[in-house]
Length: 152
Image (cartoon, rainbow, N blue to C red; front, side):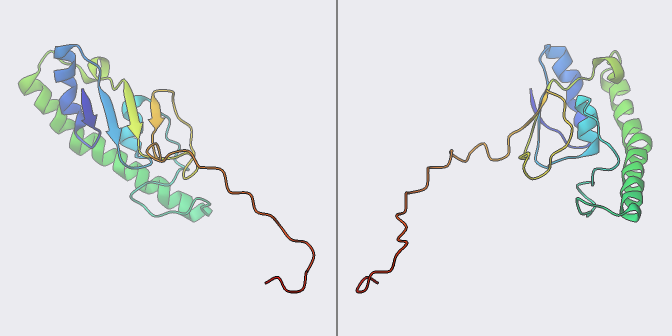
C-alpha cells in the first residue's frame, strides 16, 4: 500500500495489516523527524528541522533552538496527535497494537544526498533527481595557445 507519510499516516496501518500487505511510504521533504521514526531512522537533534530555518552550520544557540523546536514537535505529536490515533484504533480496530503491528516497510524520500546528507537506514531510499538523465560528455574544444595574425 503506497501512503504519503504525513502526520496521522498511522490510520492506514490497520488496513495494511488486515490485507497482509506492506506499507510503502513517500515523503516530499528532505527530512521530518516523525517520518524518520516511522521507519526507525535515527534523527539526531543536531540536524536542522525542515519547518525551522537553520543553516547547515549552526551556532550553539541555533542548535539549542533547533533542539527545542524538535522536542516541542515531539511532545505535541506524543500528547496531542497520538491519543487521537489511539482513540481511532480503539473504536475501529480494537485488536490492532501500534507498537507491534505498525510497520512501514520502505520509504521513498524526495532528496538527493548532495543537498542534505544524513544517516539513513537501508529501507529509506532517496529518489531526488531520479528523473534526470545521466549527463552527456562535454564537447572537445581545441585550445589555441599561440596568436596568429588574421584569426579572430
